Picture 1 (cartoon, rainbow, N blue to C red):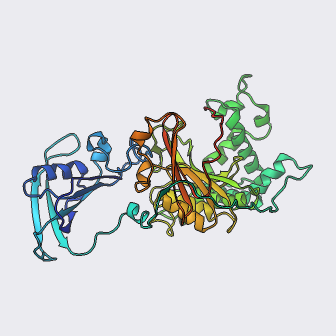
Picture 2: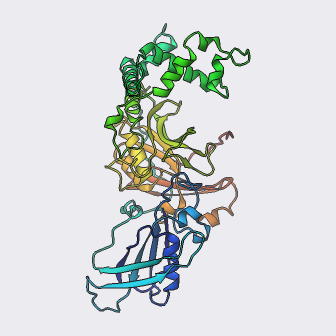
Picture 3: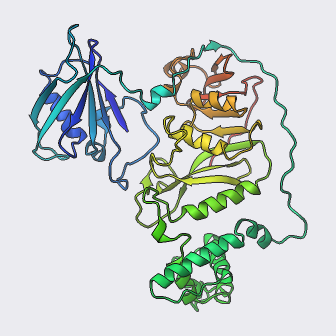
Length: 469
């Protein structure tokens, strides 16, 4: 979401702009404000643009760049075409304003590359109710007293717990069947045959067929060919006896074209991944059941290759895989995944955390999957980190560390980024809040980096090897 604030002027009552013409874009709203500059006082104006409706545009949900008050000159065409709203504060010179008074402005929109010549009617309605707090303001309700220096706390002892150990004599297939157990295979076989029957085909897929099908999918991940039918060709450079001896090509194509893990007649229309969620829920339960007991965890996003058309497929600038479907993932330091959830916009947030923001919601949802009152150490990047998140994890007994964006630590006593970048490499500044136990450190490396933690300390300093990709 793009939001920009014009320079503040006099104090006054808040007027809410409502666009009465369907599909008013940011370009049209900005043209109206510029053309009616004399009628609209020079007061604080908050213009908010919703994300582009077409989620497959070039720029949709990238998580880099300016977070607050970005420049309007650097917006893309899809953002100018997005629906926009405007909040305008108008001073009444101390006179009471009738709460039901309405004033209409009519303006002719200037034709441009992103809009056509139309007439927009905008009605302003005065109200004496307090403005609703935004999500960013909700995250900063708690007050913190930042002081230079570190906090000295006793080290928490990591408890020894029983975990699922590898038993001697087991083959790899037995470990695979712990996750893809009979109930998972039975679900896949049942709905695959059901979907085939609805298409007037003989649904006779068995659990053994499904196991062979999954095995070929796994094989194609590290023995790749340009077309899957090449596994069954007679050419020596692509022929695979392991595949041809296990299943025929037509049988594989039958399962591939009818594969389902749910009943299409009972889909949740609000869930963009309703056809996939039954399998993900069963796998998440088994990931959690057989997870090894380890202290270090991380939460991040993962891009999954998908070459079809889907509303949640997006482009994220700067990522190795830029145009794919994004999954939120939580796992252990060794690479074991405990929980994963596909990203589908604002609906991904749980109802318990929807007012806290996407990053906060994803971390707390993952923490809910872990054992309670165990001092896990959780790590994440600046997409997730906020002071409010670190504080709430501390109250749950969780330890957390992550890089944090500069606009989320505005009230701390750290040196500014412009000042730190002039310091020698390795210089750092640290401040902390004793009641909450949160420390924030900013240091100068190849670039200025800001990190926050609710348990760790800067001292003692040491040298660390850095590996590139």
